Image (cartoon, rainbow, N blue to C red; front, side, top):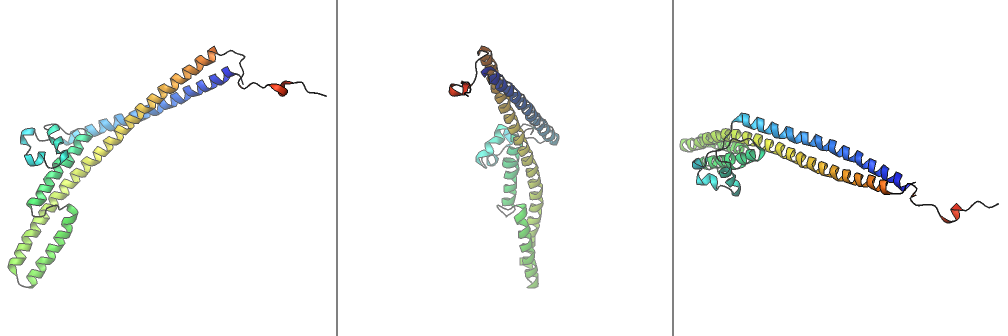
Length: 223
């Protein structure tokens, strides 16, 4: 095979690959754009706003190392994935933790409060069976607090879950955007290599053969 022909074949194939990479990049970029606009639209519709800096307490600012995000986004409308994550992990979660502590159930969650309520109900029944009205009243007070807290936890954890799911969706969109840029970069590289291949084919002598057959194979057959 002639060297020029081989160069043209490889260079043409490179352009085809580049075109496919561009098409894939456009598809991924479309997913990135959809994710960004969808997340922004859905979050903005909820009208969730971070408290302004002057309304943030020291406990909220220093609850966890990541709580500094509350100061960073202070007063802003939640419209992006990172904002949704910060609001869920460092604002809602902090208030849920404080509510559990104030109610007398530090570290409690919606799930654990179910067991707590069952135990308190059994405690009330046992106290009533013994005629201990004071113990029954005290346990009932705890049960009422646990029931109220569980409702608060259910609301908080539901909102947190929705916001964190939205954050996860935004991350997928960001990854798609990054992948699109990689596809574009590879397409550009393949295009340059293809151009180099065509140039090499142009400067290569037409009659140059790749791996020419030499020696005895070129000798005429003997009788």
